[in-house]
Length: 124
Image (tube, rainbow, N blue to C red; front, top):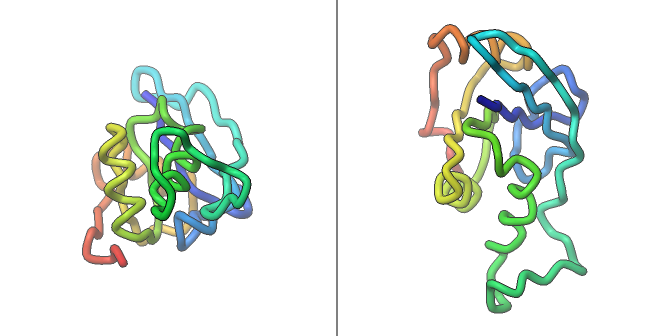
């Protein structure tokens, strides 16, 4: 299983999915973290990006390009996001969890322990 976490500083979870600079990606085997890597997250608005699968005018393709680096993750931990990003993630089979936990390691541990609380009411 792979868990993605949005971050700007590699220690805390960013407050907004679209503005975060990086993903921390955790590989979990047998309930244990076996790998952690940092991957740059494409920006929400990428002016030179054109997705041939979408017509112009929508910013859905921005969500697609942002999600591509974590396409093999099952879960993403965030502290805030818009409904468009939330829907784009779930459409790709990635479960967004909106947590109030700030520290990445603490949030991942809570997820693995089954004690993390999802706050979908914080979608904007």
